[in-house]
Length: 145
Figure 1 (cartoon, one colour):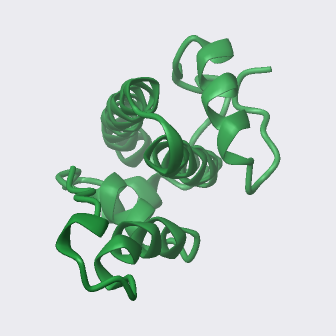
Figure 2: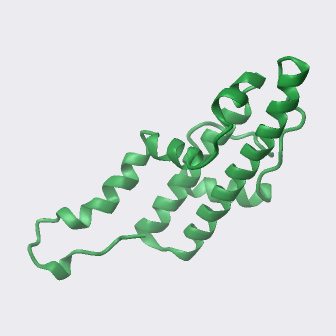
């Protein structure tokens, strides 16, 4: 069902949910509250927010498909975080929320993902090979992305 996910979706489920949804489409059935002018302005902003969440999600799905092991799990976890954040944002019905918080989109969705406490797992898995106890350089795995 489109947009009807439980919070904290597991990482493997996130990719499946996104693919079953066929991406994300605007939730036109959720009306905004505000003045006529605020609603008009916020609807334009909200449309751009939909597009940005969709763009980032597509990139994460493609990344997860190309990777294996921990790197794939990291991309799936980032997608699960994104889906939770998307649901939270799109559940807002106040025009002012979009006007005040979403006019500037650049990096906002990425920032929401990286500020989520669950993202610490991804960050830790990226650093782990560099802090291994094995002093041999070849024991380290370059996990740059």
